[in-house]
Image (cartoon, rainbow, N blue to C red; front, side):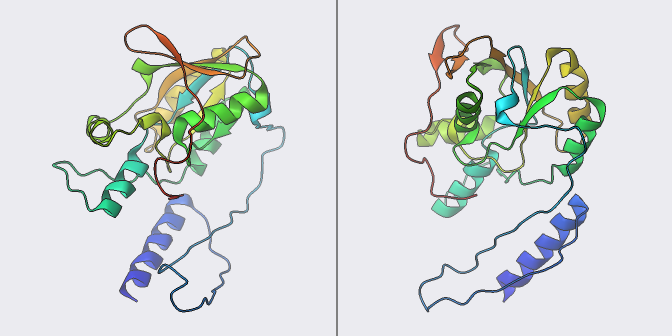
Length: 234
């Protein structure tokens, strides 16, 4: 009951921050030993602004790719807690309501083509899904991808690639080049987008391949994740 009470308070806090109402709920009963404490499933209902057409199939050659903050925070945090690992620094989950941020950027640009949250499989898997859906190639720039130093250190220690670690409160935005700066500025003005950065672009190719320009100047292919680095966490 202590855990449930803490979770309910957390849900209320998150709902208040997002400005949404929780209007219904349900419970399930399972056989003894068949459940792992508490399961929570949610469904959000909202209204799409008229004229907005967001889809992975809509990304266009020349679109710039913005990520709203540092990557791999959530997956690294959950993995550390599950494994009972202790580090000198405190790594926190990045869970955050992004609806206000989305409303703000859609209000200042009609050239946003794709919006995605890079959750399971991380940044790399999400971008591969978008490349496959759109038929376009994508180029990333390693030096421009924001990763916290402590997160990077934990990933190196455990042999993980931050590109494949799950995120929860981060947003990927594909936007036409001419609107990139104003969209980036708007995201950075939001409390959850202070570390936003342009991390890549859509290429004028039809190879459906995600590539990355590394910090040493070479280029390599970023494949879909094979299996999962972590058990399902989102």
